[in-house]
Image (cartoon, rainbow, N blue to C red; front, side):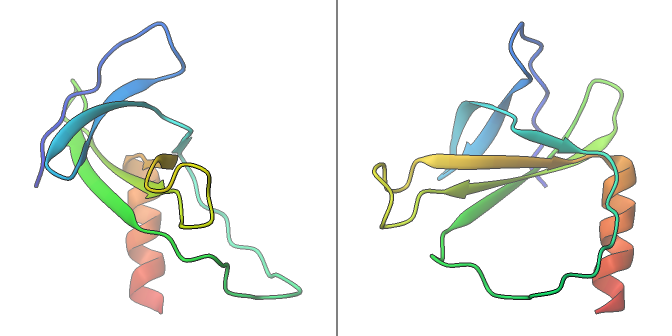
Length: 103
């Protein structure tokens, strides 16, 4: 488990993330608090395939968070640059556990 503390900033939620053994500062694009199931009319696998990394960290109150970062694919202008960052808070993590157990 990687322990990283949230950095308070004036921005939209800067944090330290771990990629390739380095700590990088990035902007959080989404903190997911709740997951809701929907039924989709069309299900397709997204392309292109990209790499992702994850970090598990705790905030100042000891709550655990999961951050998943995705990176630019070979078709992007900046290949390998972090393109999306999703964080799952405690409630969303509990939902995610239940979802994963059901599939």
